[in-house]
Image 1 (cartoon, helix red, strand yellow):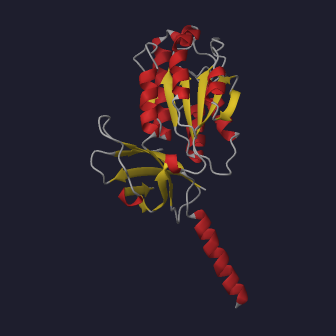
Image 2 (tube, rainbow, N blue to C red):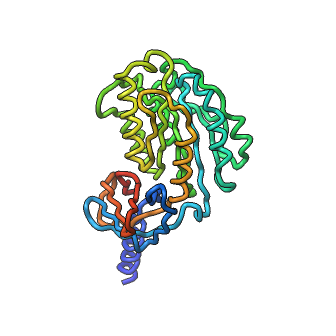
Image 3 (spheres, rainbow, N blue to C red):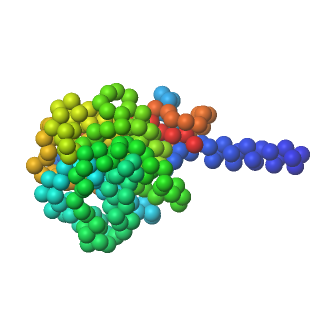
Length: 295
């Protein structure tokens, strides 16, 4: 009898552990002219693999006890003209609320070279910004570099993270074309960890900086990366942005509209499942990753 009870308890505990997904970050996207909406757990409708799923955790990101870890990354193959935008980049760093920890990294040779670990010291983060090397293809592949970075992140304790990536999106390893496996690996790794990736197009040094075909594919890939992870893609046609501040203003607005969420996922096999989110609040959309990982 004791053996049967112990087995039942073990089965229940295993089910409880497997039934909840890892935390993800969700943006309650309202019209830009409207104040940030307040969304409760009971307002949210979620479907996983086209089946209804209950929300286990839902609270504003600003209330998360671990705080936000924000990574600002610049592709080292970016044209050095981006130096004219450094005032906007530094202003964005200084605008972050005091609890936010900011880390700085550069994409080079298939990895992210960290120039500053996450810190609340805004001036230290500002000083860690430098001009990119400006050598065509030095990142090897921005998506290989991002995936390598995500693989190395500690998964415990739980830490909400977001990435802002400045790059042309051009992948010298794969080249232009659909279904880039390095891109897919990068957004799958971000989806596993619940990390939204915001991407900002800025031209590459060398030929890729003025090749319409490469620019087009690079922007497509950046857009797919952000769409898949619940971030946002920012660009200004095929040219470098005149200013980055409008992009950063929108990112800051989105930070103020974000929630930490996890779902109950019983009876699902381990792996990726399609995620669809809806909210009953009028004129509000929930933006999150397109897939959720079932551990």
